[in-house]
Length: 165
Image (cartoon, rainbow, N blue to C red; front, top):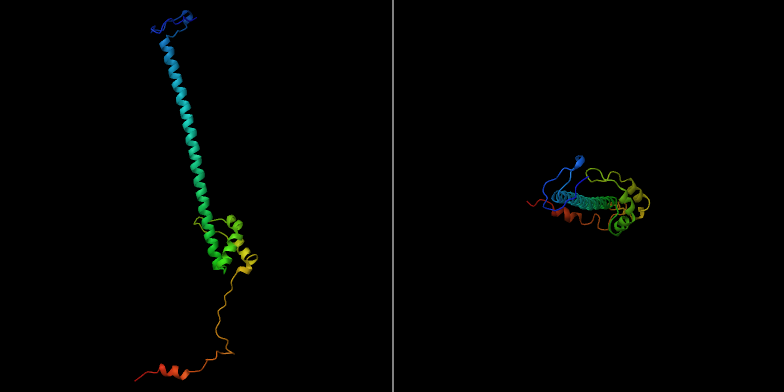
């Protein structure tokens, strides 16, 4: 059995009967201090790791949100241009953009940031938004019924372009 420690001044460990080792108060204090320091360091490290992990997750989520917003912005711009190319302009364009929000969100971008497939948008243009498409037809004068000044004043124009020698 070990001997009781009588005073803190006792510096050396004394072997007890049966091969047991007794510690001085200074040794016990050193061991306790060392173990407390280890526990505190471990707790600090775990706390720091948790803090860093939480910060990492927050930054990761913020980055994902930014990427999603950039992707959405690219999709909206591409669909807006696609509608304009297909004859939907002005207030009709704004109506079409609001009415196709779900389809825009469902679109996929390729590696270059361009939309892979416009089939869902084409379906909207052909069905739901067909009344919004502006059809512009450019044609010349109606030949069987020429304008009133057609053919008149031809001599004056011809005279104006004759060479003056």
